[in-house]
Picture 1: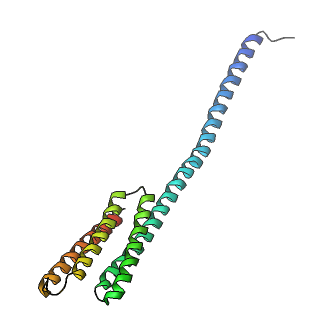
Picture 2: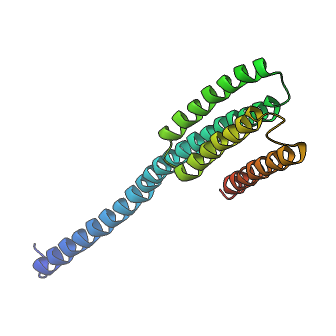
Picture 3: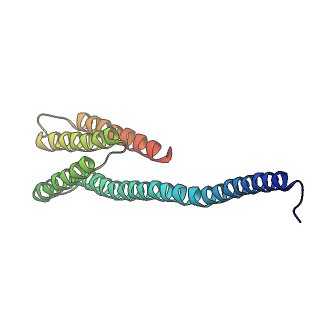
Length: 167
């Protein structure tokens, strides 16, 4: 004995089955993407964090070397002429290392180039002050030039620290 509405029942069951499969597919797709998307976002965030860590490492290394050069520049005129020649050679070596470090960086390259350039200028100013004899320059003039060089060094150092702290 067959039911009279066998075709209607079959259509209703097939429609139900299709809608059920469509709902399951939508739910599975949503679950898949809600699980998969965070993994890709995490990978992107990890890459950004690695880049930030590299920048911080570079900044720390650059800053420590820059401070070392600044200390050598501060002490160069307080030493004897023979020692000042040796210190000047080390300063030139350190400035060339800083210059090589700047060539490898991408972030704030102009800032670092200016810092290295200002260190070189400060070294040149101090060399000029040392090379002039007492006959050529009186004490007040040398103090004024030294203060000017120190103010310029302090200005670029302040700008550097401001730029680093803005990160």
